[in-house]
Image (tube, rainbow, N blue to C red; front, side):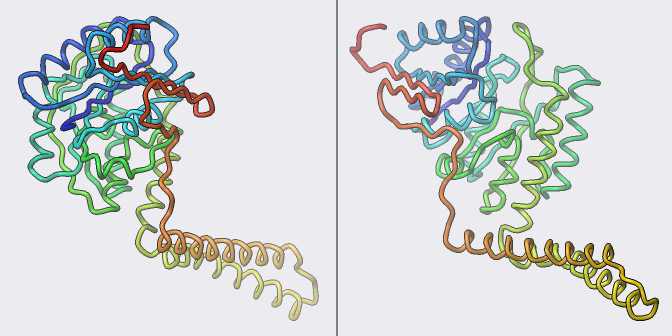
Length: 328
């Protein structure tokens, strides 16, 4: 399989048919072997029913159904796990990403890049609630991670499968994939892509995601900073607290010796600082051990490449129509 297109869907019943037609129209002229993976993220409308209709007509379409709404990142992770293409392309299901830009992303991957990020340089969204917060967030992400991507929130991206399948995805981490891939030395680039205003349905994005993004950004910064020598990084982080602990203990001794009174609160603060230093150093030791031994690959929703799988524990149903199989 040359290419897999992964599209998460959440209440996109009006978009799914034109989305399918536009993707097929963009890819059929390329004469490559490709598959479409639609991941329904717990839709409550007719999205699944209409996706089933398409899957029955086109054997290249695979449908992954999550039993409830997990969020965009787990939906991407589910599709990535199930994909079999050498190159994986992710995109939104609201028709704001243009499938006609997919060939451009594929060309950049073939040119030697591991991650190709789309840049919505003429974004068709509201200025105050979407574009300005996005510009500020992208600037902060670039400064913190050291990966200057103009549009981390653009879902239209292309990846080499052998790279992206080893990147753990959870929370809102899909927007930080370039930064996470940079830890492994991935070659990253970006290309300008088109962006259209939403025609059907309602946007699922809002300012409520800011908190999650900030927490994930903190986690990514820690991963990047400690990815090579975590023990040294954690030890450096512990040094200010070690200094504060020493000053607190010395201050309590000074009060006890020269002033003749007990400074238990000050001594207690010093003990707490020393305890924090021990925790940080032990965290560095543990992180260093994980780095050298190797950590297990983490996925929020692991999938099996089987036919007609129902995984109630993971909350996932995988539907793969087999040639000659009767319609459900």
